[in-house]
Amino acid sequence: MGKRLLTVSGETSGNATLVTSMSAAEMRRVADRLVGVLVPSVILCANGEYSLNVRQLACEYPLVIYLHPGSDDSSESGGDTALMDAAQHRVFRAHQAELEARGYRTIGVSTQRAQAQIRTMIEERLTHRLLSDPPLQLAEQLQLPTFTDEGVRRYCRLTQIVHEERIVKVFFPVTSPARSADQVTAWMTIQGIG
Image: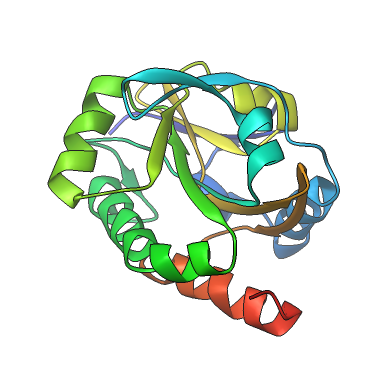
């Protein structure tokens, strides 16, 4: 396995194993800094078929945006990233009806290429959108945490809740991808959403 670098706000924090190199205070700062920020106008490939402007989608619906590495072969925090991505996709698929009943649409964003995302959507029977962002446009606009594995820069796992085009809640780090949607719906229940 090659050298891994964690990057936040354009600065590299050395030879790190993803977010484990960040202190709890640093992770809190990343999440807190994003709250209230307007979702950027970036155009990404959706479902491997068409282009979609993330800000325009946020104008139409409140969103749950989960960012994930989208890697077929790297590992994260000692586990298998591809398996953790699949678990996260499945849990959001399972919660889709509940989130839509609360008025929210779900999108997953990764650096995974569009063709690989099509394969993922078919294999996991996903009905929510997956957006492909190989140049990490969202990361650049929002200064999101990323990591480099074998020379490829990828998103760290992070979930945003967007309402009226602004980020209102951020979950970072996402330590259990399989419980990611439960975390979102629990927060919504506490907030009286839906």
